[in-house]
Length: 136
Image 1 (spheres, rainbow, N blue to C red):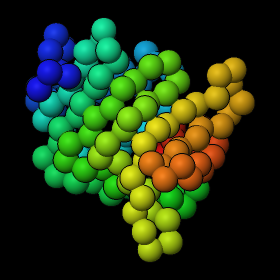
Image 2: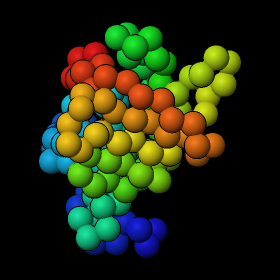
Image 3: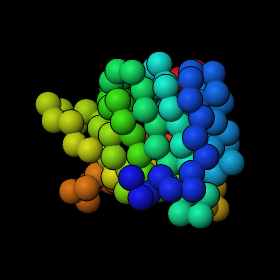
Image 4: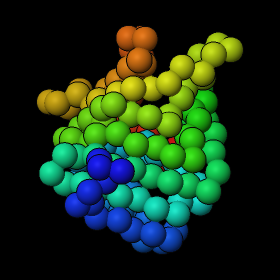
């Protein structure tokens, strides 16, 4: 895949999780934003910001502080930049009986304590950043 050319790739659970956590930290995103399962590969192309995550199986996680159920597919990818992931694929948030895909995640800059999730349909949901801290 052309998007992955020149990318740094980490394979195996330990190395992949370490890289995923370091990317969230480097780009000032909440550490618990991607509560992943058995990750087998993480990659990142610094020149374009393209990143991808492959895990053995789909993971569903409930962010208890905001009572939100989120689904993480076996393959997740998007473009990461400071306080933002855009063109995100593989993440869905449950709204009533539907699972609309999340297309963009953005943390306010300057910081207001808010994080915004935008679906491909243009629906935006805003939550407190601390709801996505590690361990939530």
